[in-house]
Image 1: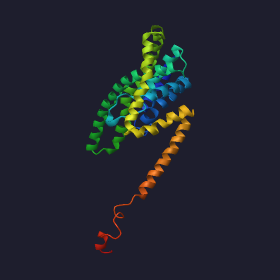
Image 2: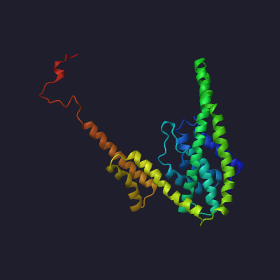
Image 3: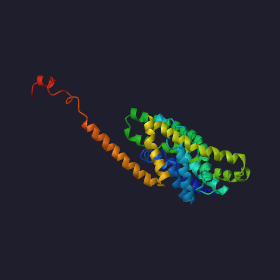
Length: 287
């Protein structure tokens, strides 16, 4: 598999859209297009191998399933993982002749995505730093009463930042990186220490993503029970992801109804006073 300049340019455009405010802020960009699960689909369409793209996206999504950006702090940039890591992983898997749905292909994809995620963090902060220049323009327009020029600050000037630190790096890394990955095929044989190390590390990376997710949702030991229901259903009843999601939705609705009915039956402070006891309302004048 090779990546042409045209395909690399399209990947660069999608990398720009991941964090651009034109895409409904973060909702459509970072939290939809930028996720590896969606990026794998897009990369599969662009590179002409839909099955391999989705497989790489699913594998990388497990590692970054709990990735958030609190206060602008970014440990890894999913934009780079989706549109640099996934294309390079697809090239690596194809050059090694691995089965796209096999464990070796998934482990290799996770390793490549993790390496690229660190590079993407540098690009993320480069975009944010350059955007400070456009914000200074906006403050000047506010002080001068030129409110109508703020549209350019929000939707115009940031495209320069994305072109320099999202579009160009993505296009260059995917085009030249694909050639480098293909060249490494002879330098790193499948039975070598380097490839075995990548597969081993890649196999353990999903544990990190699951552990981070558990720290966010588990507050006490009993919280493990609903979390493990999905794994139990998949292992014992052999249900697929869609079926497990439907079952989880049913449990969520039941729990919601129980909690709402319990809150409605809880007596308020006004009604909790004894009927034969003194009441402050008796001393108040009716209006």
